[in-house]
Length: 376
Image (cartoon, rainbow, N blue to C red):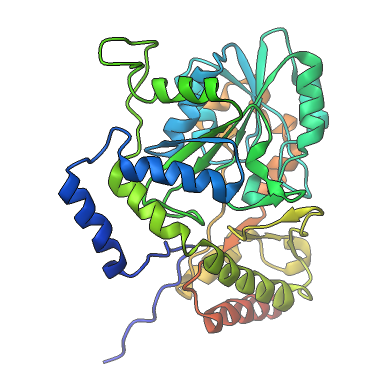
């Protein structure tokens, strides 16, 4: 009997040995503290702040709740300029706060928000900019700050992809008024589910902590209409354990990325992102972009051929957020307003990359991409 060929997924969570997690579970069982700013929660905030080199960090149950809360923290309203080339949580967080997203186009080289398109989109109702560091690559943070300062706007970075990535030798999360991380199972650092807000002063940290715990500032005092978005002790314990393995796992991802770059560099019609200057990557994703007229297949044809061979890439991000029904009616969502975003969304495939992916499988993926090119 022939065994079915194994599936290769676009990503898989890296998990520590179960025996390593058991002592953490025993401590939780012994102290019977499951949530509400328990000892592991406090410890993880401290260790992440030191590891990332950021002043203040507040943990959340997931990254989406962190985004939703960040907008409340800064009292954002009206219109916020953002990108259509992201996961839907970016703009959904605006919608949940009754804020109108205004989409502007991205740069072809980085897939990040184009600063030169931001200024044109500013209106008297604009209160903030919400860029995304796509694939962990830093936005043009200096230029965005310059624009924000001129017009008196706040900057909230969706930094979901950037854990451990650096720009000019410091964490990308140090830029903007707030930065939001995701610790979802698919991320380079995970707490199963989870997220965080990074801020720059103690007063803002206190407001964040109030808002994520119903607004309580004591047993009988409620400061604001907060929600319950706290990270629990199981998640925090997992984070403490996972943090020990981050550097090793990142280095494994780097090896995979280097193989892709080497093996695919000579294939006409396939492009990948250049490594940006002054940046230390975390190798969270490896997107390629398919130029049909040169490669011979379009993106969807290559995507499906890989799938037929049990290789599951992901068209990440496709479709654009602006193409979903709840956003399609916005003037800024017109494809005519977003030519670069539309083009890259129709060309992108993120190839499998995760620490436990065998290098032989990486080479197999590259060989198939080469072979499909010969069949055109």
